[in-house]
Amino acid sequence: MRAHLRDLSERLGPGTLRDILLVNLAVGIVGVSYGAITVGEGLPLWAPNLMSVVVLGGASQFLFTGIVASGGSPVAAVLAGLLVNARHLPFGFALADSVRNRPLLGSYLMIDEVVAFALVERDAERRRLVFFTCGTCLWIFWNIGSLIGGLLGNAIDNTDAFGLDTAFPAVLIALVMPALRDRRTRVVAVVGALVAVGATPFVPTGVAVLLALTALVLMPVLRTSDGPVPGRRDLPGGGAG
Amino acid sequence: MISTPVLIGSAVLLGLGTFAFRAAGPLLHARVQVSPPVQALMSMSATVLLVALAVTAAVFDGSAPGGWARVAGVTVAVLLAWRRAPFVLVVLLAAGTTAALRLLGLP
Image (cartoon, rainbow over all chains, first blue to last red; front, side, top):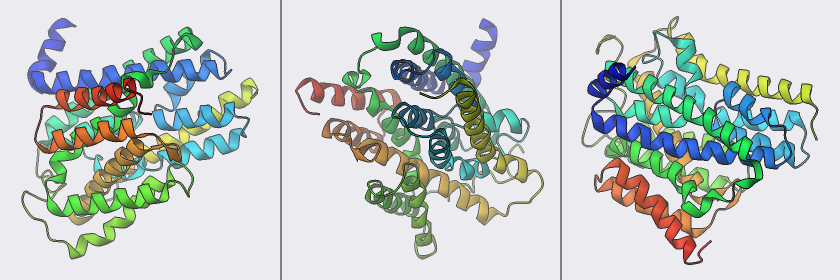
């Protein structure tokens, strides 16, 4: 086990493994708050654990708890959760090549942070390794966090005091920044983010983020500046695949 | 509150639906040849979605404003990441900024 870890650390590089562990530490703590909140809202102890295993999507799980706990219908809670997770559809197409060997496990582990970590990598083999390493770590931390949180229940106070709610957007920003150095990607992403922010107060949760995709219409009129076009680095047949 | 069978059923439905979204790409990819421009479009879509997710998570709690402390923390993250600061520094200073501002009484 230890030898395996050392081997993994060597192949990933100490920096990448450290970054992955840092993110997972934050994920674990958010998991604790998820378990605590869900049990605190009156759901049974096993509920957060069941959700964390079968759904494995933080935002949709929090939303589900919120709707059910406030007396909303389970149908509404499921639909809202699905709406939030609809963004995983294009993720699957973007990373299809990386999970080709294990499509079912890879799809199961396709979580925002994992996707962001993998997309940074240009080499196909490294991308695959980062995806499955980060995905496995995240599964462990999220589920153990949910369990601990559920057991602690109401004992957990507000984790926002430590700025943990900032960690998630900060992680995503740090990970996508290399892609944003391409001018065209930057313009499309910023316009998309503005659309999402503008729409958030008016549409159901999850829809606003999807509306960001309308900014893709700008793609043909923008020229790429520096750097290669994202996604053209490891075409099927181009890399190790 | 919700009954046990309904709760289990809802969790399984949400899990299956989520899995279907995630698996559509990898499972179809094996059968359909995706052209390079479409592949590039999907990569761009993923980046656009992640940025939109980050920015909305920075500004909102659900559909209500989430407070300035978090916005400030994420702004610090954007500036540091743009200046190519190490990943760990970006995340810790962003969270630290938010925590410090909240300590000072900013929501």
